[in-house]
Image (cartoon, rainbow, N blue to C red):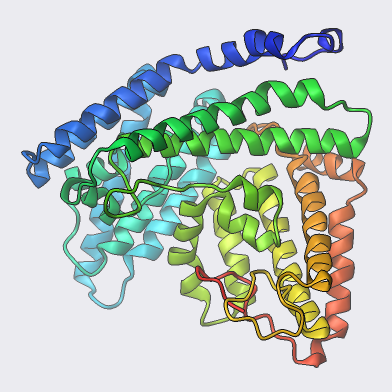
Length: 458
Protein backbone atom coordinates (compact mmCIF):
# COMPACT_ATOMS: atom_id res chain seq x y z
CA UNK A 1 0.00 0.00 0.00
CA UNK A 2 1.51 3.28 -1.09
CA UNK A 3 -0.48 5.49 1.30
CA UNK A 4 0.56 6.17 4.87
CA UNK A 5 -0.66 8.72 7.38
CA UNK A 6 2.53 10.73 7.00
CA UNK A 7 1.69 11.35 3.34
CA UNK A 8 -1.73 12.89 4.03
CA UNK A 9 -0.33 16.30 3.09
CA UNK A 10 0.72 15.15 -0.39
CA UNK A 11 -1.04 16.87 -3.26
CA UNK A 12 -2.98 15.32 -6.12
CA UNK A 13 0.07 15.68 -8.35
CA UNK A 14 2.25 13.96 -5.74
CA UNK A 15 -0.09 10.97 -5.87
CA UNK A 16 0.10 10.95 -9.66
CA UNK A 17 3.88 11.05 -9.59
CA UNK A 18 4.54 8.68 -6.71
CA UNK A 19 1.76 6.13 -7.12
CA UNK A 20 -0.20 6.32 -10.38
CA UNK A 21 2.89 6.71 -12.57
CA UNK A 22 4.79 3.76 -11.03
CA UNK A 23 1.63 1.60 -11.17
CA UNK A 24 1.29 2.16 -14.91
CA UNK A 25 5.04 1.83 -15.45
CA UNK A 26 5.02 -1.60 -13.80
CA UNK A 27 2.59 -2.81 -16.47
CA UNK A 28 4.38 -1.27 -19.42
CA UNK A 29 6.00 -4.41 -20.82
CA UNK A 30 2.82 -6.51 -20.61
CA UNK A 31 0.72 -3.76 -22.20
CA UNK A 32 3.15 -3.11 -25.04
CA UNK A 33 3.39 -6.82 -25.86
CA UNK A 34 -0.36 -7.37 -25.70
CA UNK A 35 -1.36 -4.34 -27.77
CA UNK A 36 1.39 -4.70 -30.38
CA UNK A 37 0.87 -8.43 -30.95
CA UNK A 38 -2.89 -7.99 -31.26
CA UNK A 39 -2.50 -5.09 -33.66
CA UNK A 40 -0.23 -7.23 -35.86
CA UNK A 41 -2.68 -10.14 -35.53
CA UNK A 42 -5.58 -7.93 -36.59
CA UNK A 43 -3.76 -6.37 -39.55
CA UNK A 44 -2.44 -9.68 -40.88
CA UNK A 45 -5.85 -11.34 -40.62
CA UNK A 46 -7.39 -8.38 -42.45
CA UNK A 47 -5.26 -9.04 -45.51
CA UNK A 48 -7.66 -11.90 -46.22
CA UNK A 49 -4.79 -14.11 -47.33
CA UNK A 50 -4.93 -16.55 -44.42
CA UNK A 51 -6.68 -19.84 -44.97
CA UNK A 52 -8.71 -21.26 -42.10
CA UNK A 53 -5.83 -23.49 -41.00
CA UNK A 54 -3.29 -20.68 -41.36
CA UNK A 55 -5.55 -18.48 -39.21
CA UNK A 56 -5.45 -21.09 -36.43
CA UNK A 57 -1.66 -21.48 -36.72
CA UNK A 58 -1.14 -17.72 -36.59
CA UNK A 59 -3.50 -17.31 -33.63
CA UNK A 60 -1.67 -20.06 -31.73
CA UNK A 61 1.74 -18.50 -32.37
CA UNK A 62 0.59 -15.01 -31.37
CA UNK A 63 -1.05 -16.31 -28.20
CA UNK A 64 2.09 -18.16 -27.13
CA UNK A 65 4.12 -15.00 -27.77
CA UNK A 66 1.76 -12.91 -25.61
CA UNK A 67 1.79 -15.41 -22.74
CA UNK A 68 5.56 -15.88 -22.83
CA UNK A 69 6.61 -12.23 -23.01
CA UNK A 70 3.57 -10.76 -21.27
CA UNK A 71 3.20 -12.91 -18.17
CA UNK A 72 4.58 -16.44 -17.84
CA UNK A 73 8.08 -16.40 -19.32
CA UNK A 74 9.81 -19.80 -19.00
CA UNK A 75 6.84 -21.09 -16.98
CA UNK A 76 4.76 -21.16 -20.17
CA UNK A 77 5.70 -24.83 -20.49
CA UNK A 78 3.31 -25.59 -17.65
CA UNK A 79 0.43 -23.92 -19.48
CA UNK A 80 1.28 -25.69 -22.75
CA UNK A 81 1.27 -29.07 -21.00
CA UNK A 82 -2.14 -28.28 -19.52
CA UNK A 83 -3.49 -27.34 -22.95
CA UNK A 84 -2.19 -30.59 -24.44
CA UNK A 85 -3.77 -32.54 -21.58
CA UNK A 86 -7.03 -30.74 -22.28
CA UNK A 87 -6.98 -31.78 -25.92
CA UNK A 88 -6.27 -35.40 -24.98
CA UNK A 89 -9.39 -35.23 -22.82
CA UNK A 90 -11.35 -33.75 -25.75
CA UNK A 91 -10.08 -36.50 -28.06
CA UNK A 92 -11.16 -39.36 -25.80
CA UNK A 93 -14.45 -37.67 -24.93
CA UNK A 94 -15.44 -37.48 -28.58
CA UNK A 95 -14.15 -41.00 -29.16
CA UNK A 96 -16.48 -42.31 -26.45
CA UNK A 97 -19.31 -40.26 -27.94
CA UNK A 98 -18.76 -41.91 -31.32
CA UNK A 99 -18.71 -45.38 -29.74
CA UNK A 100 -22.01 -44.73 -27.94
CA UNK A 101 -23.87 -42.15 -30.03
CA UNK A 102 -26.89 -40.63 -28.31
CA UNK A 103 -25.88 -41.96 -24.89
CA UNK A 104 -23.08 -39.59 -23.96
CA UNK A 105 -23.05 -35.80 -23.80
CA UNK A 106 -19.42 -34.60 -24.09
CA UNK A 107 -20.31 -31.34 -22.33
CA UNK A 108 -20.88 -33.02 -18.97
CA UNK A 109 -17.56 -34.87 -19.12
CA UNK A 110 -15.71 -31.68 -20.09
CA UNK A 111 -17.31 -29.72 -17.25
CA UNK A 112 -16.51 -32.43 -14.69
CA UNK A 113 -12.88 -32.89 -15.74
CA UNK A 114 -12.23 -29.14 -16.00
CA UNK A 115 -13.61 -28.19 -12.60
CA UNK A 116 -11.74 -31.08 -10.97
CA UNK A 117 -8.54 -29.77 -12.57
CA UNK A 118 -9.16 -26.25 -11.25
CA UNK A 119 -9.91 -27.51 -7.74
CA UNK A 120 -6.76 -29.66 -7.72
CA UNK A 121 -4.75 -26.68 -8.92
CA UNK A 122 -6.18 -24.47 -6.18
CA UNK A 123 -5.38 -26.85 -3.34
CA UNK A 124 -2.54 -29.09 -4.52
CA UNK A 125 -0.51 -27.24 -7.16
CA UNK A 126 3.13 -27.45 -5.96
CA UNK A 127 4.03 -23.84 -6.82
CA UNK A 128 1.43 -21.56 -5.20
CA UNK A 129 2.87 -18.34 -6.64
CA UNK A 130 2.85 -19.74 -10.18
CA UNK A 131 -0.73 -20.95 -9.74
CA UNK A 132 -1.81 -17.46 -8.67
CA UNK A 133 -0.40 -16.12 -11.95
CA UNK A 134 -1.88 -18.95 -14.01
CA UNK A 135 -5.28 -19.25 -12.34
CA UNK A 136 -7.06 -16.59 -14.39
CA UNK A 137 -5.51 -17.85 -17.63
CA UNK A 138 -6.48 -21.42 -16.76
CA UNK A 139 -10.06 -20.43 -15.94
CA UNK A 140 -10.52 -18.68 -19.31
CA UNK A 141 -9.01 -21.70 -21.10
CA UNK A 142 -11.32 -24.06 -19.21
CA UNK A 143 -14.40 -22.00 -20.08
CA UNK A 144 -13.37 -22.00 -23.75
CA UNK A 145 -12.78 -25.76 -23.66
CA UNK A 146 -16.21 -26.43 -22.15
CA UNK A 147 -18.01 -24.21 -24.64
CA UNK A 148 -16.04 -25.67 -27.56
CA UNK A 149 -16.92 -29.24 -26.58
CA UNK A 150 -20.56 -28.22 -26.22
CA UNK A 151 -20.67 -26.40 -29.56
CA UNK A 152 -18.98 -29.34 -31.36
CA UNK A 153 -20.91 -32.10 -29.58
CA UNK A 154 -23.05 -32.99 -32.62
CA UNK A 155 -20.36 -32.56 -35.27
CA UNK A 156 -16.83 -33.72 -35.95
CA UNK A 157 -14.19 -33.41 -33.24
CA UNK A 158 -12.23 -30.12 -33.50
CA UNK A 159 -8.71 -30.40 -34.86
CA UNK A 160 -5.73 -29.73 -32.62
CA UNK A 161 -5.04 -26.33 -34.18
CA UNK A 162 -8.70 -25.32 -34.11
CA UNK A 163 -8.45 -26.04 -30.40
CA UNK A 164 -5.14 -24.24 -29.77
CA UNK A 165 -5.99 -21.30 -32.04
CA UNK A 166 -9.20 -20.70 -30.10
CA UNK A 167 -7.78 -21.23 -26.60
CA UNK A 168 -4.60 -19.26 -27.33
CA UNK A 169 -6.13 -16.41 -29.32
CA UNK A 170 -3.91 -13.42 -28.38
CA UNK A 171 -6.88 -11.09 -27.85
CA UNK A 172 -8.19 -12.99 -24.83
CA UNK A 173 -5.75 -15.71 -23.73
CA UNK A 174 -4.20 -13.55 -20.97
CA UNK A 175 -6.84 -11.09 -19.71
CA UNK A 176 -9.95 -12.75 -21.07
CA UNK A 177 -12.85 -12.49 -21.52
CA UNK A 178 -14.43 -15.77 -22.56
CA UNK A 179 -15.92 -15.77 -26.03
CA UNK A 180 -17.56 -18.46 -28.14
CA UNK A 181 -15.71 -20.31 -30.89
CA UNK A 182 -18.04 -18.70 -33.43
CA UNK A 183 -16.86 -15.24 -32.30
CA UNK A 184 -13.26 -16.32 -32.73
CA UNK A 185 -13.94 -17.55 -36.28
CA UNK A 186 -15.82 -14.35 -37.10
CA UNK A 187 -12.60 -12.36 -36.66
CA UNK A 188 -11.34 -14.07 -39.83
CA UNK A 189 -14.59 -13.88 -41.80
CA UNK A 190 -16.45 -10.68 -40.90
CA UNK A 191 -14.24 -7.63 -40.56
CA UNK A 192 -15.60 -4.30 -39.36
CA UNK A 193 -13.72 -1.34 -40.89
CA UNK A 194 -10.84 0.12 -38.89
CA UNK A 195 -11.98 3.72 -38.47
CA UNK A 196 -11.84 6.56 -35.97
CA UNK A 197 -14.62 4.93 -33.95
CA UNK A 198 -12.42 1.87 -33.52
CA UNK A 199 -9.41 3.95 -32.48
CA UNK A 200 -11.46 6.15 -30.15
CA UNK A 201 -13.04 3.15 -28.44
CA UNK A 202 -9.61 1.65 -27.77
CA UNK A 203 -8.28 4.96 -26.40
CA UNK A 204 -11.42 5.49 -24.31
CA UNK A 205 -11.40 2.03 -22.71
CA UNK A 206 -7.65 2.25 -22.03
CA UNK A 207 -8.12 5.61 -20.28
CA UNK A 208 -10.97 4.14 -18.22
CA UNK A 209 -8.75 1.18 -17.32
CA UNK A 210 -5.99 3.48 -16.03
CA UNK A 211 -8.58 5.58 -14.20
CA UNK A 212 -9.78 2.56 -12.22
CA UNK A 213 -6.20 1.40 -11.70
CA UNK A 214 -5.45 4.78 -10.09
CA UNK A 215 -8.53 4.50 -7.88
CA UNK A 216 -7.70 0.96 -6.80
CA UNK A 217 -3.98 1.41 -6.15
CA UNK A 218 -3.76 5.04 -5.03
CA UNK A 219 -6.72 7.33 -4.47
CA UNK A 220 -8.86 5.03 -2.34
CA UNK A 221 -5.96 4.53 0.08
CA UNK A 222 -5.27 8.25 0.21
CA UNK A 223 -8.75 9.72 0.55
CA UNK A 224 -10.64 7.12 2.60
CA UNK A 225 -9.65 6.69 6.27
CA UNK A 226 -10.15 3.49 8.26
CA UNK A 227 -11.62 4.95 11.45
CA UNK A 228 -14.85 2.96 11.09
CA UNK A 229 -15.44 -0.72 10.32
CA UNK A 230 -17.91 0.01 7.52
CA UNK A 231 -15.74 2.72 5.97
CA UNK A 232 -12.77 0.36 6.08
CA UNK A 233 -14.91 -2.38 4.52
CA UNK A 234 -16.10 0.01 1.80
CA UNK A 235 -12.49 0.94 1.11
CA UNK A 236 -11.47 -2.69 0.65
CA UNK A 237 -14.52 -3.50 -1.46
CA UNK A 238 -14.01 -0.46 -3.68
CA UNK A 239 -10.35 -1.36 -4.22
CA UNK A 240 -11.36 -4.85 -5.29
CA UNK A 241 -14.14 -3.68 -7.62
CA UNK A 242 -11.93 -0.98 -9.15
CA UNK A 243 -9.19 -3.50 -9.89
CA UNK A 244 -11.82 -5.65 -11.62
CA UNK A 245 -12.97 -2.68 -13.72
CA UNK A 246 -9.34 -2.01 -14.63
CA UNK A 247 -8.85 -5.55 -15.92
CA UNK A 248 -12.21 -5.53 -17.71
CA UNK A 249 -11.66 -2.27 -19.57
CA UNK A 250 -8.09 -3.23 -20.43
CA UNK A 251 -9.34 -6.58 -21.74
CA UNK A 252 -11.93 -4.77 -23.87
CA UNK A 253 -9.23 -2.52 -25.35
CA UNK A 254 -7.10 -5.57 -26.20
CA UNK A 255 -10.09 -7.38 -27.73
CA UNK A 256 -10.85 -4.39 -29.94
CA UNK A 257 -7.20 -4.12 -30.95
CA UNK A 258 -7.30 -7.79 -31.94
CA UNK A 259 -10.33 -7.24 -34.18
CA UNK A 260 -13.17 -8.48 -31.97
CA UNK A 261 -16.41 -6.52 -32.27
CA UNK A 262 -19.76 -7.48 -30.75
CA UNK A 263 -21.46 -5.08 -33.15
CA UNK A 264 -21.66 -5.25 -36.92
CA UNK A 265 -20.85 -2.43 -39.30
CA UNK A 266 -18.76 0.62 -38.52
CA UNK A 267 -19.48 0.86 -34.77
CA UNK A 268 -17.09 -0.84 -32.36
CA UNK A 269 -17.70 -2.24 -28.88
CA UNK A 270 -17.04 -5.29 -26.75
CA UNK A 271 -18.58 -4.57 -23.36
CA UNK A 272 -17.32 -6.67 -20.48
CA UNK A 273 -18.51 -4.72 -17.44
CA UNK A 274 -20.64 -1.71 -16.54
CA UNK A 275 -19.55 0.00 -13.29
CA UNK A 276 -22.69 2.16 -13.11
CA UNK A 277 -25.00 -0.85 -12.74
CA UNK A 278 -22.63 -2.45 -10.23
CA UNK A 279 -21.99 0.58 -8.03
CA UNK A 280 -25.62 1.77 -8.01
CA UNK A 281 -27.56 -1.46 -8.52
CA UNK A 282 -31.33 -1.69 -8.71
CA UNK A 283 -30.95 -5.32 -7.61
CA UNK A 284 -28.18 -7.77 -6.80
CA UNK A 285 -29.24 -9.84 -9.80
CA UNK A 286 -28.30 -6.89 -12.02
CA UNK A 287 -24.86 -6.82 -10.38
CA UNK A 288 -24.37 -10.44 -11.40
CA UNK A 289 -25.17 -9.62 -15.03
CA UNK A 290 -23.03 -6.51 -15.42
CA UNK A 291 -20.06 -7.54 -13.27
CA UNK A 292 -18.73 -9.75 -16.06
CA UNK A 293 -21.12 -9.89 -18.99
CA UNK A 294 -19.31 -12.58 -21.05
CA UNK A 295 -19.03 -14.88 -18.01
CA UNK A 296 -22.71 -14.31 -17.24
CA UNK A 297 -23.55 -15.42 -20.79
CA UNK A 298 -21.33 -18.49 -20.41
CA UNK A 299 -22.96 -19.57 -17.14
CA UNK A 300 -26.43 -18.91 -18.50
CA UNK A 301 -25.84 -20.89 -21.71
CA UNK A 302 -23.93 -23.86 -20.29
CA UNK A 303 -25.29 -24.21 -16.75
CA UNK A 304 -28.45 -22.25 -15.95
CA UNK A 305 -30.49 -23.22 -19.03
CA UNK A 306 -29.58 -26.91 -18.58
CA UNK A 307 -31.18 -27.06 -15.14
CA UNK A 308 -33.97 -24.50 -15.56
CA UNK A 309 -36.59 -27.14 -16.55
CA UNK A 310 -36.21 -28.77 -13.12
CA UNK A 311 -36.44 -25.69 -10.90
CA UNK A 312 -35.56 -22.03 -11.16
CA UNK A 313 -34.14 -21.99 -7.64
CA UNK A 314 -32.08 -25.13 -8.35
CA UNK A 315 -30.80 -23.65 -11.62
CA UNK A 316 -29.71 -20.46 -9.85
CA UNK A 317 -27.98 -22.35 -7.04
CA UNK A 318 -26.13 -24.66 -9.44
CA UNK A 319 -25.08 -21.69 -11.57
CA UNK A 320 -23.44 -19.98 -8.60
CA UNK A 321 -22.01 -23.27 -7.39
CA UNK A 322 -20.49 -23.99 -10.80
CA UNK A 323 -19.07 -20.47 -10.86
CA UNK A 324 -17.41 -21.26 -7.52
CA UNK A 325 -16.00 -24.44 -9.02
CA UNK A 326 -14.63 -22.48 -11.98
CA UNK A 327 -12.73 -20.35 -9.47
CA UNK A 328 -11.23 -23.53 -8.00
CA UNK A 329 -13.46 -23.41 -4.90
CA UNK A 330 -11.23 -20.68 -3.48
CA UNK A 331 -12.72 -20.16 -0.03
CA UNK A 332 -13.20 -16.40 -0.28
CA UNK A 333 -14.64 -16.45 -3.79
CA UNK A 334 -16.87 -19.46 -3.08
CA UNK A 335 -18.37 -17.94 0.07
CA UNK A 336 -19.00 -14.62 -1.68
CA UNK A 337 -20.54 -16.22 -4.78
CA UNK A 338 -22.79 -18.60 -2.86
CA UNK A 339 -23.87 -15.80 -0.51
CA UNK A 340 -24.53 -13.54 -3.49
CA UNK A 341 -26.57 -16.27 -5.13
CA UNK A 342 -28.77 -16.68 -2.07
CA UNK A 343 -29.06 -12.93 -1.51
CA UNK A 344 -30.01 -12.20 -5.13
CA UNK A 345 -32.63 -14.95 -5.16
CA UNK A 346 -34.26 -13.78 -1.92
CA UNK A 347 -34.13 -10.16 -3.01
CA UNK A 348 -35.69 -10.91 -6.40
CA UNK A 349 -38.61 -12.65 -4.70
CA UNK A 350 -38.98 -9.77 -2.22
CA UNK A 351 -38.94 -7.21 -5.05
CA UNK A 352 -41.63 -9.13 -6.87
CA UNK A 353 -43.69 -9.22 -3.68
CA UNK A 354 -43.19 -5.48 -3.18
CA UNK A 355 -44.22 -4.89 -6.79
CA UNK A 356 -47.46 -6.76 -6.17
CA UNK A 357 -48.22 -5.22 -2.77
CA UNK A 358 -47.55 -1.60 -3.81
CA UNK A 359 -48.57 -2.02 -7.46
CA UNK A 360 -45.31 -0.28 -8.38
CA UNK A 361 -42.54 -0.85 -10.92
CA UNK A 362 -39.96 -2.18 -8.43
CA UNK A 363 -38.98 -5.60 -9.81
CA UNK A 364 -35.38 -6.47 -10.53
CA UNK A 365 -35.72 -4.72 -13.91
CA UNK A 366 -37.87 -1.83 -15.10
CA UNK A 367 -40.96 -2.95 -16.99
CA UNK A 368 -40.84 -2.81 -20.79
CA UNK A 369 -44.59 -2.08 -20.99
CA UNK A 370 -45.42 -1.15 -17.44
CA UNK A 371 -48.99 -1.87 -16.27
CA UNK A 372 -48.42 -0.92 -12.64
CA UNK A 373 -50.34 1.90 -11.00
CA UNK A 374 -47.11 3.60 -9.92
CA UNK A 375 -44.80 3.90 -12.92
CA UNK A 376 -41.02 4.15 -13.08
CA UNK A 377 -40.72 7.83 -12.07
CA UNK A 378 -43.54 8.01 -9.50
CA UNK A 379 -42.25 9.19 -6.07
CA UNK A 380 -43.36 5.95 -4.37
CA UNK A 381 -41.56 3.86 -6.99
CA UNK A 382 -38.45 6.01 -6.78
CA UNK A 383 -38.40 5.75 -2.98
CA UNK A 384 -38.72 1.94 -2.99
CA UNK A 385 -36.09 1.50 -5.70
CA UNK A 386 -33.76 3.93 -3.91
CA UNK A 387 -34.18 1.93 -0.70
CA UNK A 388 -33.30 -1.30 -2.50
CA UNK A 389 -30.31 0.41 -4.12
CA UNK A 390 -28.95 1.64 -0.77
CA UNK A 391 -29.37 -1.82 0.72
CA UNK A 392 -27.55 -3.29 -2.29
CA UNK A 393 -24.64 -0.88 -1.88
CA UNK A 394 -24.34 -1.94 1.77
CA UNK A 395 -24.48 -5.63 0.80
CA UNK A 396 -21.74 -5.13 -1.79
CA UNK A 397 -19.57 -3.47 0.87
CA UNK A 398 -20.21 -6.45 3.13
CA UNK A 399 -19.44 -9.06 0.47
CA UNK A 400 -16.46 -7.20 -0.97
CA UNK A 401 -14.78 -6.73 2.41
CA UNK A 402 -13.30 -10.23 2.18
CA UNK A 403 -12.12 -9.90 -1.42
CA UNK A 404 -9.32 -7.36 -1.10
CA UNK A 405 -6.62 -10.03 -0.89
CA UNK A 406 -7.04 -13.29 -2.78
CA UNK A 407 -4.46 -15.95 -1.99
CA UNK A 408 -4.15 -19.71 -1.86
CA UNK A 409 -3.48 -20.05 1.87
CA UNK A 410 -6.33 -18.15 3.49
CA UNK A 411 -8.64 -20.30 5.60
CA UNK A 412 -12.39 -20.01 6.01
CA UNK A 413 -11.70 -18.40 9.39
CA UNK A 414 -9.80 -15.54 7.71
CA UNK A 415 -12.87 -14.87 5.60
CA UNK A 416 -15.50 -15.20 8.31
CA UNK A 417 -13.63 -12.94 10.73
CA UNK A 418 -14.08 -10.07 8.26
CA UNK A 419 -17.83 -10.61 8.23
CA UNK A 420 -17.86 -11.06 12.00
CA UNK A 421 -16.43 -7.55 12.38
CA UNK A 422 -19.50 -6.33 10.45
CA UNK A 423 -21.85 -8.37 12.61
CA UNK A 424 -22.79 -10.78 9.80
CA UNK A 425 -25.33 -8.08 9.03
CA UNK A 426 -26.21 -9.05 5.46
CA UNK A 427 -26.60 -12.72 6.30
CA UNK A 428 -28.83 -11.88 9.27
CA UNK A 429 -30.92 -9.45 7.22
CA UNK A 430 -31.49 -11.87 4.35
CA UNK A 431 -32.34 -14.69 6.73
CA UNK A 432 -34.97 -12.44 8.29
CA UNK A 433 -36.32 -11.52 4.83
CA UNK A 434 -36.39 -15.20 3.91
CA UNK A 435 -38.49 -15.96 6.99
CA UNK A 436 -40.91 -13.15 6.11
CA UNK A 437 -41.20 -14.40 2.53
CA UNK A 438 -41.87 -17.90 3.80
CA UNK A 439 -44.83 -16.51 5.72
CA UNK A 440 -46.07 -14.89 2.49
CA UNK A 441 -45.63 -18.02 0.36
CA UNK A 442 -49.37 -18.54 0.20
CA UNK A 443 -49.97 -15.18 -1.48
CA UNK A 444 -49.37 -16.53 -4.98
CA UNK A 445 -46.08 -14.71 -5.38
CA UNK A 446 -43.87 -17.01 -7.45
CA UNK A 447 -40.15 -16.65 -8.11
CA UNK A 448 -40.28 -16.96 -11.89
CA UNK A 449 -38.04 -14.00 -12.66
CA UNK A 450 -35.36 -14.35 -10.04
CA UNK A 451 -32.68 -15.08 -12.59
CA UNK A 452 -32.74 -12.16 -14.99
CA UNK A 453 -33.27 -12.96 -18.66
CA UNK A 454 -31.30 -11.02 -21.26
CA UNK A 455 -34.15 -8.74 -22.15
CA UNK A 456 -35.97 -6.19 -19.99
CA UNK A 457 -39.35 -7.42 -18.88
CA UNK A 458 -42.10 -6.59 -16.46
